[in-house]
Image (cartoon, rainbow, N blue to C red; front, top):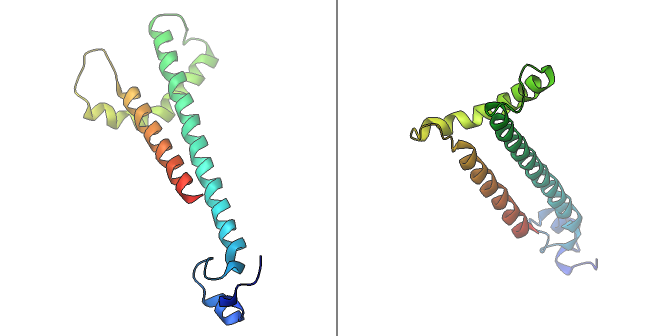
Length: 130
C-alpha cells in the first residue's frame, strides 16, 4: 500500500483509530476480520451439527415408538441416551411454554426454526462485516 499522507508520522499511525485514517493499519483490521470470520463459521458449524443431532433424535424416537428400533441393543441405547442428553435441556423450556397438544410434540419444529433464524442472522451479519 502506498503511504498515506495522514500517517507519515509514526505518532499519527498510533493515533489513528480506523484503517481509512491510516492504511498501514489495514493488516491489523484484516486480522480481526479473519478471526471474526472464523468464530462465525465455528458457530454456524455448531448450529448445523446440533440441527443434525436434533433430526436424528426425532427420527430415532419415531422408530423406537413404532417398534422398528430396539432399545435393548446397547449401541442404540447409548446413541439415544446421548442425543436425549444434548437435546432435552433445550427442548424442555420450549415444551413448558407450549400448550398441551395431546400426543403431538412440536417443540423440535420450533427449535429448528429458531436455530435456522439464528444461523441466518449470523450469515447476514457476516455479509455486512465483509
